Image (cartoon, rainbow, N blue to C red; front, side, top):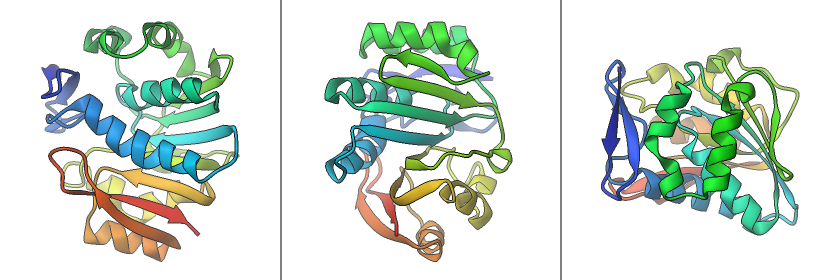
Length: 222
């Protein structure tokens, strides 16, 4: 039960009728992803690191928008990207194409992503010479990895719709796969989330949110 919806900045998103939630902000899908995950997450980490490599773990891969924006930025900055998404319910390939990200993102990147999407659900693949992608078809608490990540994009549906994703158990499970100094970003900020991150040994920053949200959370693993 997924419906294509145009958001305020002209970019599209999906509305999930079963969950009762949009995949991205109706104030602008593209500008929300750029603000929350690219600017507050990736660009922040790169500005504080001398590394030419970055590893990203995304909780809620969804439509792949955060991945596409991250790939574009890393290509532009000549940064090697290792990207892992967790997604228990992968979207149909044709539905992804119908969102038409190639209208406002690099067409070559989008075309390669679409052609590689099905395979990436089964194994890690090269999207380009500098980009690896793997989408883990799994519920969050079943996710296991030998890898540690520099950045976590926490992009689950809102806690009112998916409260199980925002528990101490779920957040701590994700954070154990982060390197010291790693950056955790999400569009949401609540008292419970701030307390959880502090309990897990993070330094919490309340920063300006994307249009439609006053604030968001960025936390640094100590």
